[in-house]
Image (cartoon, rainbow, N blue to C red; front, top):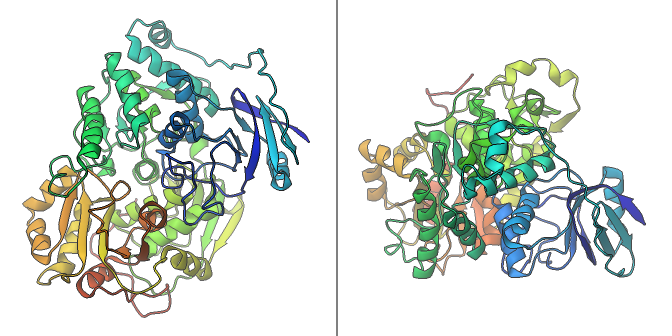
Length: 580
């Protein structure tokens, strides 16, 4: 059977077909050294993408998927080809960077929904630019056509000057990557942005460092105010924490390269907590999934869910594709999610709701109705955003009566398709996130994304005058700025007296042993994002629950939580609320 679609990256390949109708995050979902799928929640878990034609509807989750894609390419264990049902930007960008900077590439194609569904019963696939042949036997590898299908975009005089090399080689190469990425997005031109946030500072392996070193050798220098995401080590305390010296050297070198280019030493996955946080309507160039979603949805700033690497290119040029969430039409809800009556719940309802809404929304921007009576704090919306970004492909959401732009779409819920979210969906996801097989807790993990001032305040009130159990490690990750602010407020002293360890610069998505004790079986967290990724990334069972349940588990070494509605706990109230 011959199916014609759209070529995102030209090329030919013929191999065994791995088809799945569920999106996949390569960060936290695929081992970059082997190609094995390690996402505990994915139907293909345990199988390998290496040398196969991988057909999935879209990527999802982390912006770092592009870096994992490049690692796979340079390690020789990438898929033979990628076939998508929707335009896929993160993984495709990883292939574009591999092609332009390292001469390593694979074909990437997109099919219509009806054609994509026909792949489900086939064993082999051959990709030839925009054509996908499927069969029950391996077909010969076709020759690559010499016919060019390149699409151009409108360039400004400044863009043409940059591409001509008049602003240096680094900017020239960066803008060429942006130009090709813009074509994939369907953008017709580029726009100026006011600031950048770089997620590519995470050390995923040699490829992430080689990318930075390539631009360093070109004399790269950022022209925008630029913040750095959390990195793979606590730069100031890695020896004390027992981090491997080789990892510390490589991760530190990567971070220092971006600092030398002009980035701030922010080292946080929650840049919206900084004084430089963008304002309503401000066009920015951010990466890091939870940060992008919070910026778009809660702050009302405008950014695409930029893959790692494109964030660096934006910081070097000040230019980004005019597409998606930068456009009014790209911020419009396309599905309404109606939330039914919620059971009595605690603060874990916000990450749990975000996780389920993301699963239901997939690549659609949702307008969530039925939560108007809730009055979430900023830390609640932060938790919702991170969980939504774990399961969804979309770069934003709207909460009716709560978030920045929801009022613009008053009445739209009557015009767009709607989906019901009921208690059963919440309970099912709660059980999926609670993967531990026994109630023991060896480590309490807080700060994914990085803890904010509000969260330190709440945690301090729960921990004051108490001591954690001697058998339990209790670790919080946060940014340097927030740590200093919490220390000034006296919260750090209280938490240290409780027995907590506070780590800056890095985050749980990058931490392993020995911060996670080698003997630990189970981890307790209030982050749906970390509860999703941890079983595959660190091979531990996870208990997911509220902040109070985390503190109790830290004191007793036991998890006593229950699914939503099965206990009498009430939604925690606070005088400090957030509402637009």
